Image (cartoon, rainbow, N blue to C red; front, side, top):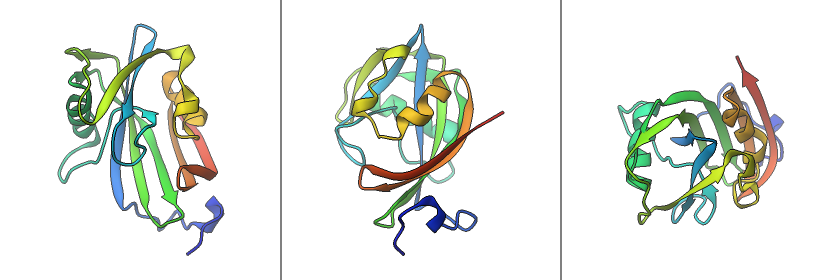
Length: 165
C-alpha cells in the first residue's frame, strides 16, 4: 500500500509493528533531551525512551530506558498520551509519551545517547523530528494528547494531533 496522507490509512485496523516510549524530564524550567547515537532517529535530538518489552508497562519502559540512556532514575512519571507513526516504507510505531518532574542521579553520556538540558522556552526543534514542534509544546504545558503522523523517511507528509482532557 502506498500512503500519501493520513486518509490513506485505516486507523481503526492499524496495528503498530513496534511500541515505544518517550520520556521528558521537566525540572526547574528546563527539559532533559538526548542526542541519539544509534537506531531510528540517530543524530537527532529527542527525549529518552525506547522499545517496550513484553510484559512491561509504558511507565516501566520509560524509566528503564532513561536509566539505560542517561543514567538517571525518573520520578513523578505521568503518562501524557501517544503518537502513532506510520512510515511509507511500511514500518509503524506507537509511542507513548510521558513526563517526569524529578529524577535521581546525574545525567551522563552513554553509548546510546548524550544528555542535553535546554530551557523550556528554547527547545531545539530544528534538530528534532519535524512534527515534534507541533505536539511537544502541549506536553511541556502539562497537556495530554493523541496524534498520528505519516513519514517518508524523516520527512513528515501529514499529521493530526489533538489535545485531550
